[in-house]
Length: 491
Ligand code: AMP
Ligand code: MG
Image 1 (cartoon, rainbow, N blue to C red):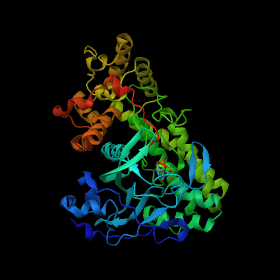
Image 2 (tube, helix red, strand yellow):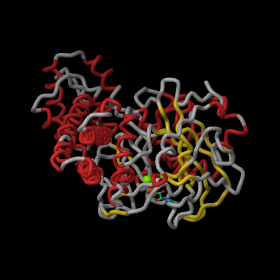
Image 3 (tube, rainbow, N blue to C red):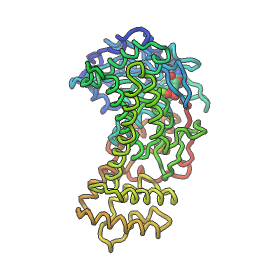
Image 4 (cartoon, helix red, strand yellow):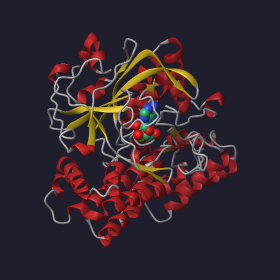
């Protein structure tokens, strides 16, 4: 385990040509910084000794008051399609890539400081982030990781009494230290395509491949193969989001990681009652990023990426790469849903069984997470009652009819109920980061400067599959106020 000063920085991105970034240091808060939360699990990724969080220098390093020895901070340039429209100049407007740390296993992690002050890409923004949104991002990264979904991770949140003005009024400023295998996005490529800087485009692709797709380096058709791999990774990510009931909320191409990891958490939401048209982002009036549209939007975004990579490949190659999307998504989604239903193999008629369940959930506003969790308790014996499921539905007749089909299907596999229940409990989470849970943690932090709820959720969500009798209330349905939480892009 290392002290902060012993972190091994290798700033490869800062070493790319000047056009790729702007070199600058973070702007510290005008008020003293204090530690809001520290995530030891993320610290382990960079071999950082968790005891380091107790040193007074810790908050100085992670709020821009001191520069980490060996770091070479830059704001990264990118552009992107926002709600379908190309925005030529985005970039890190309030975040700074402090540098890249390589751990003992040889893995590289970007250390990104979000809320670090204005940069040349800030446009009209103040360069800051508010405590409310850093808590959301910090907790959701851990929740997704606990669910086995690729994601950025939060190392810590540092707060201060610096006031930040947002739509909602005056808020508390904070900074989030975010770890990611890379912060290169689809938009990092788009910017060089639309500027016709094709040599930079190739340079960026070769740069990403050298670190993350080493098997492709040197191959004549490496750019086309690279695109294909990004297509497949993105398809798998979309399948995982859909299976767990996660809505990202702002799937602009500047928020799409080139490695197929979830990033840039804003107005995200996990489904409560099953509603495929769920729009979690209050600013998304047209529902472009509604839950059920995510797979299509993933494809649309990949299309934008493929367009940007055209100078590096033939149109034929780009089309072929994009064609890998749907089969990869369908195969992975089917596999995940098969596991959620507790089936050993997927048969053609199982699609109907799944659709039947989803339709019933939609009609009855049944809770997505709780319904799947309860399926594990359904016994295959035809004479057994389907109690665990029944309680979730108003239409008991429909529920019973579906349960008859389900039990029959389970019997046709001949497995043991107890074993299946155990398997299912490892794929159907008991706990997800419902908006109301985050809201409680945010209220305590912002109103009372009490951070215990943040840390409790962090710990709980690390293993969202385990039964925790002491934490039962965190698996409850949202209270009425919790169903009407409005989350917008304001952050
Ligand atoms: P987001 O919607 O958070 O993904 O941000 C979209 C773009 O706006 C990115 O280029 C951000 O860096 C920038 N941005 C968002 N909020 C701010 C802010 N408060 N100050 C400066 N830039 C911002
Ligand atoms: Mg973003």
